[in-house]
Length: 94
Image 1 (cartoon, rainbow, N blue to C red):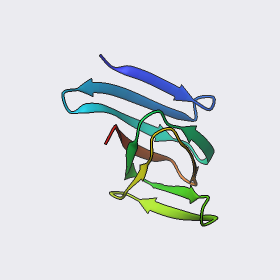
Image 2 (cartoon, rainbow, N blue to C red):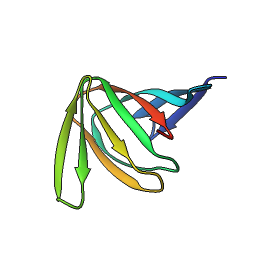
Image 3 (cartoon, rainbow, N blue to C red):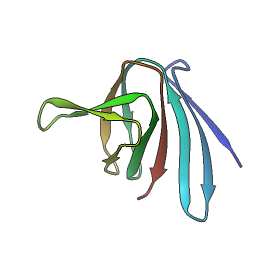
């Protein structure tokens, strides 16, 4: 079954699936600043555009472009900033 997710007044949308390999979503993000929380660990891969991730322990942002990935631990919050329409693949529990 495909699950549709919508956040931040429709500025972030994703389609999710579950398979034998686990749970994944493919999504799009409009420009803006966002904060998400996680239940499980996540690996996000930028499919198109750029996504910046905020590291609070260093008080700095790191930019991730097409083909690059970042990991987010379970039971945490993370901030991202997007300056152009972007797309991502998110894999959960990895």
